[in-house]
Length: 250
Image (cartoon, rainbow, N blue to C red; front, top):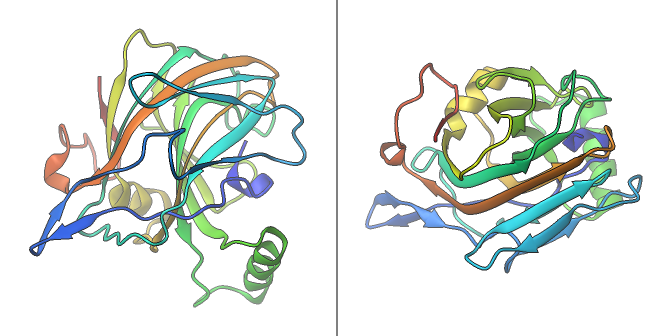
């Protein structure tokens, strides 16, 4: 499932606090808590079940279902140049087994985290501007121009990068695969990942979203998400193995 199909994860994002001229990490509301809004899709009958966890975070279960949670943060001040690293924890209790995750029929993931970016009209074609205007008119909110989708894959190796089968404006990057018996900590340099994916610097971020989806395969997936925040590069747990490749810490 992809941002461009519906369009799906269309909220607003920002993150980062500047204190005395220095970048400081900012913790975001826990998924399922204040500020996170459910996003359902008209063409999909069943929605993913998101249940808050006692210690913070959310458990997501999808049975032939798909829906998202979106955090709207457009009123926050985010400078990706100072706080480019997105941190979070996640785990997959029930993975999917998808033969071809790069196809439309296989575009299901037990866990994914979206970072969406503002549409830049400068340099956009007349058709792109028309589509953007139509989307904003239909959905009553600002639409993303591009998106990164960090996924927990069933087959693709960590570090794999590909274009969404639904829209050329979304890139998927695999961070992990298979089941997990413990939480996994991620620290992704969003700027480096965007440059690797789109070969240019990112626009201003627009939205943050999470989604567990299993509608295309009509399977069952269970995942958990918690502890989102942005921080400076120095706060990464360890450096990327190659420029622009997101790196998690088990």
